Length: 229
Image 1 (spheres, one colour):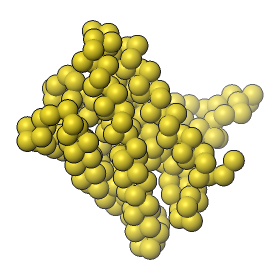
Image 2 (cartoon, rainbow, N blue to C red; image 1 turned 180 degrees about the vertical axis):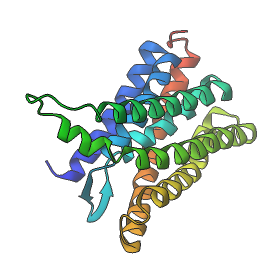
Image 3 (tube, rainbow, N blue to C red; image 1 turned 120 degrees about the horizontal axis):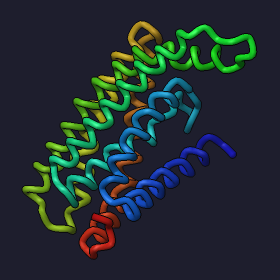
Image 4 (cartoon, rainbow, N blue to C red; image 1 turned 60 degrees about the horizontal axis):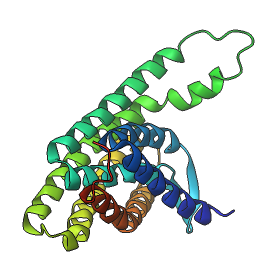
């Protein structure tokens, strides 16, 4: 299977999991998904791949779904609940980074086979995590504010697509810019950094376009009382 087909498969599998988490666990399921998306995205981002002829970092899809989650929380629950989910993601990433950097400092046993691989991944995590934490907080809190702003002006159900996309696309621009500069400045040359920034943002923008039906589905389930309290 080509990278492009895998990318689209991963996109819809992520959406399916979010809807399953919400349908059966309610807003608690969305609170669970945020740490999952942030932690996995910060591991996947270490791998670069060629998609549609451009160099991309992995993790774009699952990270972008965190904006979908906060939009569902903002739409169906409250701005406060969306903010709590973002803070949960922030604490989860900070805890993972600190705990794993302690873990890799243990002297491995002679029979160990994983230490070298764990060190290769998590020894670079502090810089990636710092970039992600800064980008995550700035972009997610902007997304929550922007969703509320657009909802106050276009409150009808038919305008969900406006508040979903208008909030997310600007937030993802902030996220991509902040993360790319902090994570990769001095690591890659300027041309590569610009390419990563542009392709990362474009990929997240595509996710934002495709995730709009999920917000409508989640709103319908909530309105019909199908979501657990």
